[in-house]
Structures are given as C-alpha cells and as structure tokens.
Amino acid sequence: EIVLTQSPDTLSLSPGESASLSCRASQSVDNNYLAWYQQRPGQVPRLLVYHASSRDTGIPDRFSGSGSGTDFTLTINGLELEDFAVYHCQQYSTAPMCSFGQGTKLEIK
Amino acid sequence: DVQLLESGGGLVQPGGSLRLSCAASRFTLTSFAMSWVRQAPGKGLEWVAVITGSGGSTHYADSVKGRFTVSRDRSSNTLFLHMTSLRAEDTAMYYCAKRPGPIGGPFHFWGLGTRVTVSS
Image (tube, rainbow over all chains, first blue to last red; front, side, top):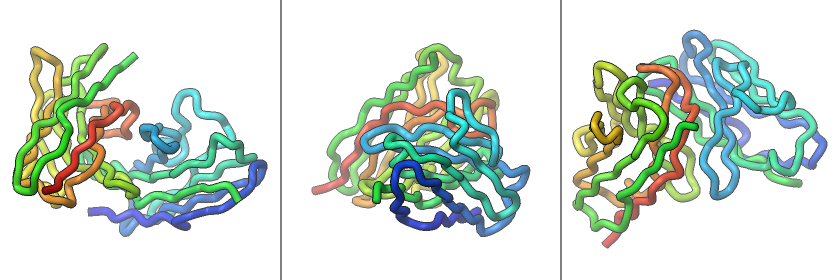
C-alpha cells in the first residue's frame, strides 16, 4: 500500500497570497497517477487535478499541480475566499485500489 | 449529467449490519469502476472498496476486508455496500464515487453521501 503524507496539516494564509501544498508518497507513484481534490465545509470532494498536473474541466488556472515520483505539489496562486477549504491528494497507480493523504486545511489568516 | 444518489445510512449498534445503496443515473454503472469512500467526522478521506467495470472484480481496504461486500445490480443500475460486524470506527459519511474507466483513474463524480453512525 502506498501511504501518502500531506503537509502541512493546516496552512494559514490571506486572500491574494499563494499556497503551496505538499503530498509525499511512501513509494513512487507510477505514471504520476496522483490527483488533488478540494472539499469545502459541508460539501462533497471535487476533483481539481489528475495525472499530477492536468486540471479537470472548469477548474480555474490559478490551481496547478506538479511533481513526479514521490513528491507532488498543489499550488494555488492569488487565493480567493472560496479557495479556503480542505485539500486531499490521492494516488491511483495501484488501481483498482487507491489511497488518500490525510488532508491539508487551508484557512484564512 | 452523471448523478449518484446514496441511501441506506443510519444509526446501528456495534456488531450490526447495514446495506448502503447508490443509484446511478445517465451512465451504465457496469461499464465503470465504482468505489465507496468514507470520511469519519473531522477526518480525511478513506477508500473502502471498489468493483471494476466489465469483469466486476472486487477489492477492499484492509480495515473492512471480510466485513464489507460491494456489489451492483445491472437492472436497477445500483451499487451496494453490505456492511456487517460494524464497529464504532466505521462511523462516517459514505460516498460512492465513479471513475472515468473500467479499472482506474481519479474520482471525477461523487454522490452526496449517506451517514452511518455505529453506537449503542
């Protein structure tokens, strides 16, 4: 099983700033099959990025994913109020199984 | 648009059983890998189980193996999760989620979830 560790657990920033969220895997994620989800309070997770760097349909370009192997990053440029949420990374290289990180909470400073 | 609607959650005593359903609309459920993902209160997401498209093979997280069974019904286009020997740590919101292919890929569609509480 691939264990994903996200850091930090909580990130406090102000609107307009940029956020960098990390997801580290216990072993290499083949084909960079790594996704990022956003979950606002009381809402269902929403797919933001898949294959490490491909934005899903309708996702603003201020969201970008990068990384390969065991180290991945979600960057959000010019934070907007609606971006303050919990972010989850997921690896699906072991399909049909998969695993998630523990989540990073992005909160308003 | 794709729709997933879960039902069947509720309050159950430790050791009890529950069957969750996920009714799928506007796509043929048996053509895609379908998973159950849960989220305990205040916690992260945990993948629980998957049934693949076409062949319908099933796979489970170690935490539920031997206690949970995922299945589907072609005629009603519905996914199920039969949960037995429930424990307090199974308390969570349970989501069904669809993948873009028969085996792998990210979860690009999610249901609204159904809440399960295991307590005496």
